[in-house]
Image (cartoon, rainbow, N blue to C red; front, side, top):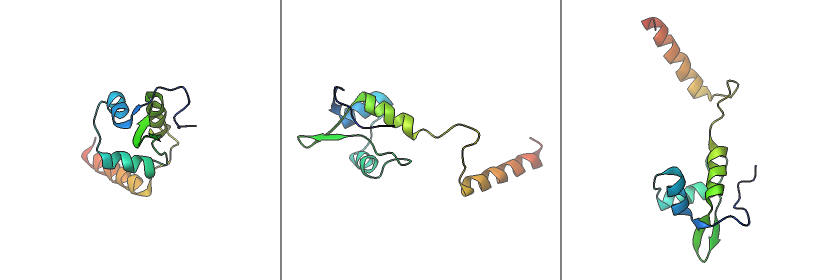
Length: 97
């Protein structure tokens, strides 16, 4: 999946695009981390124009879709989370729930 900003898409300052699409504000450090390190292996798509980070609403939508966790029952669970789930299931069974 190509997350990059595509030619022809209307460019907005990255902070404005995120705020419009996700309905919350992020800090400059968060945007910097998202564009360099990414989230779940996907870097936030930006282009630098005149020293400003720009993106498009469409690119934000593609990025958000890419970082959503897989909701299929066959998705892999981290060992820590699997242990926590097992512990929770055991406690619930003890309580009769």
